[in-house]
Structures are given as structure tokens and as C-alpha cells.
Image: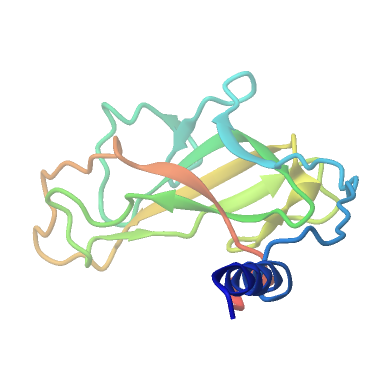
Length: 186
């Protein structure tokens, strides 16, 4: 065969390979907007509602006391009560309210002080909230009264925890979201 025919055959084979054997020819495709819309996130917040009650201490006799000058004795209880404005928005929003940094501190021993779970009261709720309840969006915007009781045990022996200081400064409240069950099933 002459060189020209061989060249034409080689060129033809090359074109066939490019076109039919892996070449890039456009294929049909279609894209369409799904019109999914948009979503807005919920909110979780906890604020002191000082307009109604910025916080007060009462003793075992339900007398309001000045915590800076009060001297506690074994058998006494001190209860801190504070109104909190709760924000809970979201279709699956659930949260628990708890006291933080409470318990034994400074010179007080575990045998001397007991801290109760925080009691919650919502004057506008249809049913009372009990300690450990999971709060839902139904309390959104409500003022919830939180009370935490510190019992200075009568069973204290000798001079255990005498002339000691209990620092309430770091104690606070925490509102913590409880994740939906589906979020943990992975």
C-alpha cells in the first residue's frame, strides 16, 4: 500500500477512536430548581428577670436575709429564689434547667451541706413544673421562678464547718438543650 492510503486509514481509525471509543460527546441532561424554601433556627436563652425578682435569700423561717451578713448554723436552710425569663423556640426544642457550681466548697464538707435539685415554678403554666422536668417550647417567654435550697445539716458533728465561708458567687443556673432522639441514632 502506498503511504497516502496508509495515512488515510490511520487517520480514519484515529477519528473512529475519538468519536466512538471514549471521546467526549455531549449527552442530554436537565436541571430543575426544587423550590425547597428556607428554614429558620430556633432559640434557647435564659435571663434574670430583675423586673419581678432579681434574686433573694430566705432562711429556715422564710425570712429574707442579707447573705453577706447572715451567719448560718447546723439545721438551717438557705433558699435562693430568682425569676428567670426562658426563651425556648423550635419545633423539637426541649431543655433542662439546673443549678451549676453548687455543692461543697471552701471549708464546708459534704457532711455539712446538702444542695437540693432546683425547684421550678411557672405561674402561667397549666401544670406545675417539677425538678428534673424537661422544658418544652410551651414555656417560651414565661417567667419561671427557680429555687435552690442549701441545707446546712443538723447532723454536723463537733465543730465541723464552724467559722467557714460558703462562696455562693460561682453558683448559677444553666438551661441546656436536650437533643432530639433522632440526632443520637447514628
